[in-house]
Length: 128
Image (cartoon, rainbow, N blue to C red; front, side, top):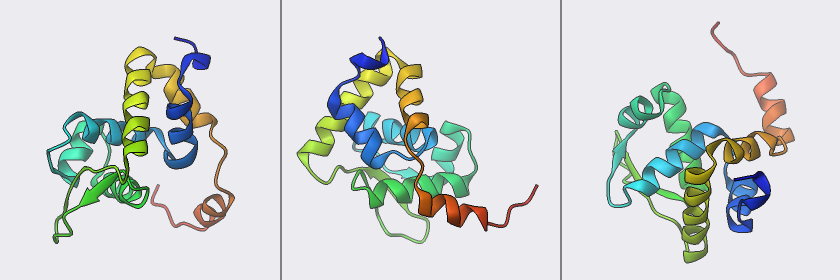
């Protein structure tokens, strides 16, 4: 499937709400088991990342209206689109991802960078 065959709904979701390939993978994992709650540690093992990065992506999904947290000290997260349009967009994205994973990931990486986030990241302390 060429990039041009990815639905407008899926494209809109990526452009508006998906900031990284990791966030994409986590969203699709949550959407694949809509009734299940996921702890950050479980998510990090499933998508091969560190728990802190998983938490950041999960909280990002909550902020985008795509997931919900139970608010516990060690929260669990579940797929919870804020409205039916988001649910349709996620379904379209999941279908596109099943047909052409690479094209969908390329769209995520082609997304324009958020200038404010890029500026803030320039001052972030990192351990190398």
